Length: 369
Length: 239
Ligand SMILES: Nc1ncnc2c1ncn2[C@@H]1O[C@H](COP(=O)(O)OP(=O)(O)O)[C@@H](O)[C@H]1O
Ligand SMILES: [Mg+2]
Image (cartoon, rainbow over all chains, first blue to last red; front, side):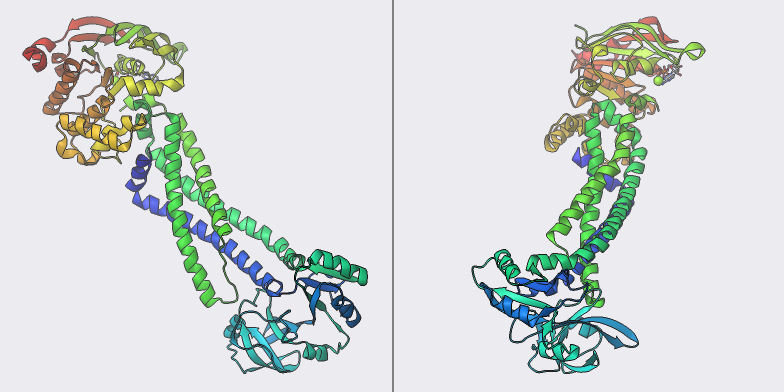
């Protein structure tokens, strides 16, 4: 019966175009929302993710970078460094700052690191180099491009002039951009010689972060000791709580729009052809075969819409990457799987009323002329 | 055994003072190779009768046997298969599917019965060629004349090799020439292929092809008559 579904659909090309087009835009919307969400999550997790530290230490009660002030004393830092299994420790100072251009303030997370250690260091340097001297700063390439900043430019942050020594990739989030300065300089700015906000630790080969953490806990007090995975999760928690419900609602709306478009076009097509479905019934086509025919018609139009929507999504993602810069749209295999499943769901739901309509057609009507 | 047997078939519509006795206690038998014409004025119950014989409508009372199977006792969900294998329908308004060309229209019953598209199309082509439509295989219904459309619908009716052809006013929308051709095709399927053909019509021309004529009025059979078949039929005369 598949070829009948196909012929029926292509008999009305404009209608097919409208329904597939409607679905394509619903798909685009879903892909885009999920893609943006993925992009935001990826950007937010980039800093802890790309940090080779396997254990992150903060003041008790502080479990992420965005809530409250963390302090880790030099004494605790030493105790941690002396714990068996710890390879290297580096303190990190985090300073919320802003960059002002044309009267607009843009948030910056100033994070420190201690070259040449890679703990907390900028990753993916695409231009220039890491910090070698005091007063240098490494900034996000997308942020720099947006603000027309170049290598060697001087930039004033927290009432200090920094010289841009390098640009790295993937350090911008929708809320703020990460910028890297030297730990020594950060200590000076905050007048904090004996402490840092966080402590990053890497492990020697063969040591388990959970066991080492337990060991550290016996040697220190008043600290929160997190594995890398926990730290990443904590940093994303608030974001997920805030954005996920919004994403869900908007994707649901897109699904409803898709169902409405497909449902309406399949329904009108079914009504228009109800006499023909009656003929098929009279000839001996079973109800189930006719339902299948409807599903196939809905399915073919949604699949055409799905493919068009995916192609559109890549186009829009490219344009966003090219012109909006700070936001990136990330499609994962999961994104496609979810959107595909929703598309299949759409065609099933959209077929429901037309199928009911078909079930009611009386084949005896075919003799009425 | 008769191919089609109706015993005391009655069909009532509505109830009380709006009750319509569309068919009222009709009994008849149709044998292999028979061409039965049911005549009568509009509203006499011809279509209702043929719809019941085609397993598309349940009678209010009475029994219908097709090839010895009592279809009035069968469950609703097995009737489509029965129609598919035993009955071919020919309608007044052709009833082709507008999106399908002649070939695919004729192939529909075979596809519905689970044959592959390729096999179904081969058989449809063979049937259409036999009916003189070799030049019209890939035409859509909108590009076919009335006579051609009716021939496609006859091809669709014949393709599953059914035992009965039920035709309701098959010539009503056709001119004399095309009407004649349709009559010849129905005659051939009865005389050469041994099918039972039942035609409901008030077209006087069809009397020539019929072997048997039943006259209906107000749902009842009021008269029986022999048709003009034997002197008209080219197949029977040459045989
Ligand atoms: N579905 C129906 N509901 C009510 N009355 C009907 C229905 N179908 C047919 N009838 C009535 O039954 C009678 C016989 O109709 P029909 O079988 O169509 O006659 P014919 O085919 O000889 O013109 C008519 O009076 C018609 O109005
Ligand atoms: Mg009639």
